[in-house]
Image (cartoon, rainbow, N blue to C red; front, top):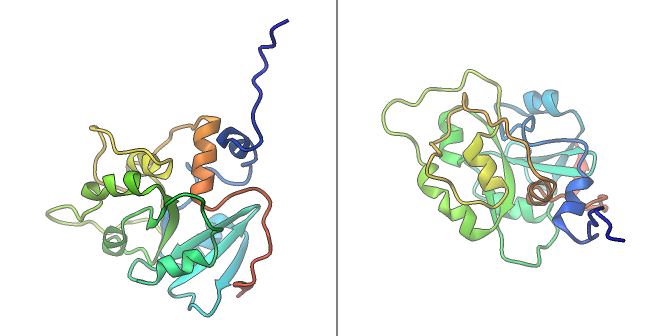
Length: 202
């Protein structure tokens, strides 16, 4: 008899996506004006990364996620991310989900870092420049992903309909189980957390 039950391999994106319970892309801030504001939204544990000043980078630990936030002007963000994320078996870029220049222009002091496939990450570059004309400072203390950033988050190239980021264009899009696994992996999620000697409470 043929079974209609879908088997999910333990090493698949779907298996990883099934384990995600604590956070989701529609409510996770990609930028914030202060540590206090981000912690107020996220809760969890605040962690320092080695000797790196928290004015430059810090981690919020929620469930099995360790979210790396960095100052958009901090040039050592790749080194900071490397102390938190596990080694990846394929080439990746560590990058700001909200472009560093735009985050600074909008008045955000911290931006979420993700690991993205290089070809997908770099294809978004043309949409991550500062818009021409007047830049409006954000009226919010945190900001969420729009549809274009969500595509970047799951290693997809931008589509023809995607626009430069505006904090009012928040994405409200569900993900398939596979996409949720890719999204979680981009944040460093790989299942239960292992001890990390580079991290300490502050």
